[in-house]
Amino acid sequence: MHFPVSGVDVSPAIPLVVSFIISFFASMGGVSGSFLLLPFQISMLGFTGPGVSSTNLVYNIIAVPGGVYRYIKDGRMAWPLAWLIIAGALPGIFIGVIIRIRYLSDIRDFKYFVGAVLFYMAVRLFYDLTPLAGEKNLKARALERRFQVKSDTGSTERGYMHQKYGSVRTVTISWRRYAYEFYGETFSLNTGTLFLLTFIIGIVGGVYGIGGAAIIAPFLLTFFGLPVYTIAGATLLGNFITSIAGVMFYSIIDIGYMNKGVSVSPDWGLGILFGIGGFIGIYCGARLQKYFPARLIKVLLAAVILFLAVEYLFNLY
Image (cartoon, rainbow, N blue to C red; front, side):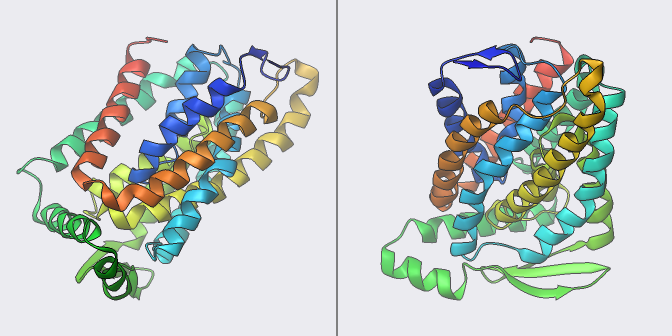
């Protein structure tokens, strides 16, 4: 099948299967998987123009709602955390789109920086799994183990656990501090620090079309010591909203580039195929996340981030 916008020729089954596999595992860590689809499109499909970033955002728009719905239904959506992520990332996304189109139309010009950032995050994630991690992270890991053990028990106990402990409950929210309770433990973070962090991450997300969740999730896990079972829904929802804004901005800017022979608008056909596979994968991943050990989720997330970092740093694609 030929996709005229991107110039890609590929069987429709390949985008569906690839996005399903990637999104299934990535969604368990609060990541849509778009950061892995980008190198796949570049190296395997030969889609290298600026439109690859906006196509990735189309994938997010279609794929993410399934996971968001599942986390809301399970009561594990930290709503204030999601809105804080969106508030910080949205202005960053717009700046990132401008940088991508005006200064980084060749993706190679920016991949070394992204590779270095992703490499650092992978190292931090692996560090979080060692005994050297701080006390806050140890508390989150202990809670994750208890929650996962309870999720493996019978259906009656699971239902009681979900109603009494398994939902995220806001303790306090202000311009200085956000705190929530989950499974009998309280976790908190500085809202100003999170806003600044998500703003910077939003810029990177706008450039590469990853929405930002791929970078935000590891920071929430390592720097703020939040349990993975509570952040996945918020990061996915943030990814969804910022991706809508990013696609709109790319499409508007594309009008001014039509006469320059450069297409920055998304390949909707390709993006929709990726999105359908991703929708199913993210929903299944979100549905089954509580049955997977949090340590396994973090190892998988760290491994794929490290793999992508090596790809960028050493120009393997």
